[in-house]
Length: 386
Image (cartoon, rainbow, N blue to C red; front, side, top):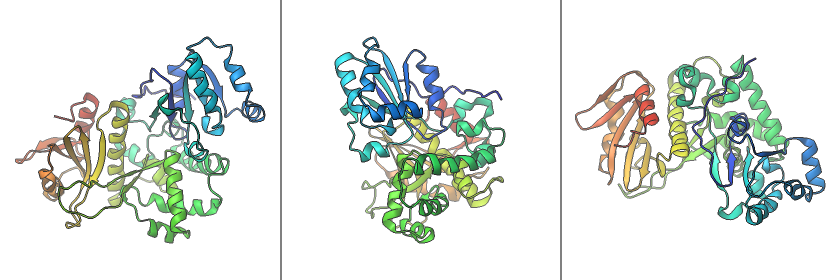
């Protein structure tokens, strides 16, 4: 079967860099396209892995014949974190440049590994965004089965998503020995999926999954370290006196959320609302990573107004941009309460409501109502900031 390769927005670094991202996200394909002349070492190859494990001195010996300044791709670097010491030496003494690719940073952190002290920057690859997919992007498909490349290219997306979640448990969690209680982790995953685009409640997750709060905290870190989920902090500056708020939680892809709960029919109701918000959250994160759209992102929810919030506050320098997300095809005046309440934030330059319809409007008090296509256009053209 022909596998379509989508052009990615991620651009290579001119210096050594770590490239992280979930399995099946397209890292290896991107590396083959962008580093065709690099020397490639794949630690997923069991023979190479076992050879280096038995004799780490083979790694610098293999690098020795390469011309100074060459590019080297070291894939699945988390399998042998100790190799980073030799990478550091090769960068310092010979000017070799490395792409250090992996699907997890957990073993690197656990090993207290030398992360090259600024000699290598970090990049992350995320699921496909509409700009990368072009005419192949369809909102309902994105909300139903997501946009992870290995799933998008599959003949049966539902079957592939189910297999992907099983692969994650087997290849990423069990094989890497990231958790001791695999059964507890398996119970935790579908419960955590229910908190997509919602404020985290660790106690509730622990109760429903039948594990302790500290165990859930560790499991959440595993999801972040394997690049399958992330947390959005609450805005805590002094717009109003307020209590510290818990973070919101987002999976990187709607398809994952639904596969973990074995839901493959088109989403409706509240579920669709959470998935649409998650889509926008991940779009913002992608353009933040790839294009430097913002320097800081948070959500806003004042303690004294339980039903007033803004989904996303973006900061660039001293300027702020507020974005609220609604999955309906037609915006409602009630959807604007949070954007109107946040207008007094110092440095606020634009307030936007993103909705699922095809049109765009502006209210009398300057709030832009952007249908998804208009919002995507502004992301693509870099015109979101005024």
